[in-house]
Image (tube, rainbow, N blue to C red):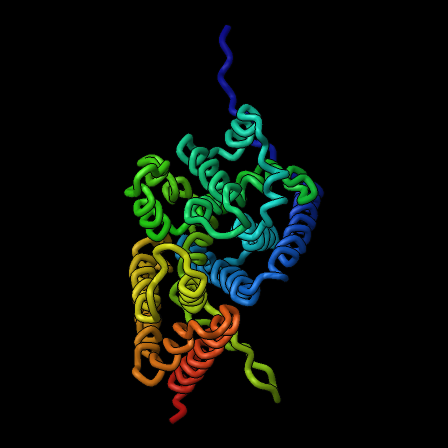
Length: 376
């Protein structure tokens, strides 16, 4: 006698298990946030990086909510507490690999190939991503003193994911398996492809380069986020920040507080590279602005969500307007003179350029708000 096959429905988590999962996730957010502040506090770009985290968090929620509305027309939608905590966890985790001091990274990177491979498998790195991780780490470790290498920069998303799996005090493995998988997908998937592919391509053309075609292909794999609207929203939020001058925080009876946007952040990265004499850095302010313009154009081509695609052209116009403002002769000459003043200490030059650019950014945002509100 045969019996009909029956399908056992998946177990539905109880309210208690969901509450425990959320509590563990929030505790994880607190630990990673504390670590990020510890890493950023002594850095000269602390303010830019902190503002980037603020903007990416806000933009992820806005984009994800927009996608929820698109996928559920006419329905009342909301971002759940669990999803909100996942967003915060990813915000603090996604760039942590950029900021970890080299001695701490040395402790985390195992010299044993089998141990490394086990961790790479857990993180679902492709073979090419595993090779890129090892190349980037090796290049950073080989520097006479800790600093910048384009190979490591291109692998920072992989280092961020690796840190979660190996830095035990962060408590990543206390999270549910579903939360672990979601976070790794978002962190590895957030990478801005065009910039890093171009950077690796330039390296691959040099004699003796260890950069491979596979690394170029796998440095960014947005296809792996297909069907995951939260991961796609985070990807677009991180990239869209490259198009924003920043935001103004209104403070009654006090001066508005300016928060640096990604466009100003990447401009200052170019400026810093120029002042520090990094190989292939722009020669002057015009070179810095051209680099930013190329980044803006590339960013608009990488959006995944319909919400970001729909708004991308308007964001690009605003970004190009600001870069155009910095090219106006009186503004340009003043900033360029500060940038190229070799007679001043590097940190003084950097502070001078940052101050001048921030002033223009604040004025740009103030005028934009006044135009929007009809203020003559």
